[in-house]
Image (cartoon, rainbow, N blue to C red; front, side, top):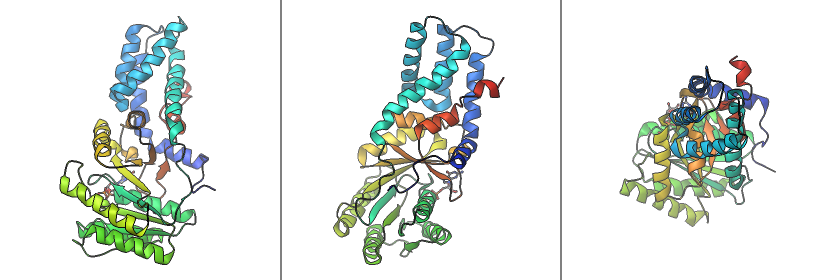
Length: 324
Ligand SMILES: Nc1nc2c(ncn2[C@@H]2O[C@H](COP(=O)(O)OP(=O)(O)O)[C@@H](O)[C@H]2O)c(=O)[nH]1
Ligand SMILES: [Mg+2]
């Protein structure tokens, strides 16, 4: 039995499409410039395509990988019409990520231990608390008993924000006063989870930069305390990244994951940006899987990241007809 439905429903695809609207039109605009008025695939066109993908936030390294494959194919097939190149592009990107995604196929595995403890980390304002609310909603919808822990005690507003989400979703929350020791809140939350027989615990944390030593040590302390109550906790550490920051999100992910054990990534705010191509860069560049993407501010707006659906949405198969 899996936690969430594995199959992508038509409704999910629809919201993914509308969430990625800005990114898609950005990619289209860039590709149109490459393809318009040209009939033959030559090296100049390939260079332009390369540049288009890089500036669509797919990033240099990932673009180079895709273009290498495409160049080999174009060379091998000796002659290619510009029309065919879009199809080839989709195929090669799809192939690249389908291979990469194989190792991360455990996205929706059921919990192995109870309670399953998820700790959420990342810098300020990226969407941690919002993603926790959405995630709590999904677990709640899946019939799980969820408990939230407000371990971001830095600002009173942060605690209130999580409380509002807990009410909206209809799940319990453990919170203390502003300025309380985050590790103590995590401790209380796990104790309560054990007592209440909660199935999923999600711990919010204060925004921190990977290079702020004191704050990073605080994370270690929170972990240690949780492990004492529920051995092995946290079972998941989700790093939240703001997708609208494009390549900065890639850098942030690289730096954060080099100092903290992170098990999965959450990319938020893809609805408000044309930089959605960055998701491809991140899932190619990091060995940690992108688990969820945020495509809006509503409860339902957190989706599993499914690479094939994502590519389909960013580069639809019927682009030719749409743009004829
Ligand atoms: N449009 C959009 N806004 C989001 C998304 N995720 C978070 N936000 C907004 O980003 C802002 C910061 O989110 P918050 O959860 O407080 O960030 P935190 O500081 O990391 O906890 C809020 O205004 C959220 O509503 C998303 O997927 N799409
Ligand atoms: Mg927050």
